[in-house]
Image (cartoon, rainbow, N blue to C red):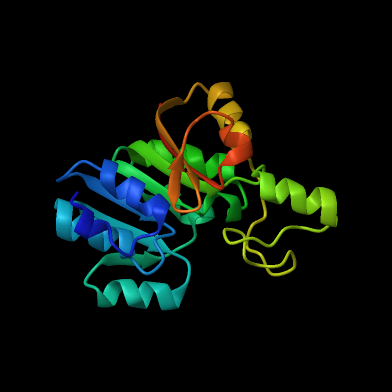
Length: 201
């Protein structure tokens, strides 16, 4: 996808958009207002569908002419047929689900491959906030106080890698972000604020 098509997308969404094959079928779970779906549709000819829990976001996505339904990743993915999509996408949503292990199973049942992005709770600024301040961190990527955050599962890059290994899930690609910039895999669990993984069975 050309650089112009990626303008305005969140950094993790830019990575995903750049690695979804043109003309493929994709389901974006927790698609927000449909920004990624619109970019995939308009610039890569992707047959993009979405599911989103927030009614206002659903209305915004539908207003863009996107095929989005209101639904909850924890309960509604079972209604999708196996192998219906080339890609299932879960961006910045895994840590908000009640049963992330089951949601990941559904992603890999529905899609041949899955993109998963999440904030890294082992990032050094998060660690420092807990160590020196003794309080749950509020950062640029975790901007909401503990009592209002939708994040109910606090995972790290190393947690996710271990989860994949235990279940025999293959990592096809992994990207690590510090702010808006890619950072190397070296010490990513300490140095990266977010991670993006491309996985398959």
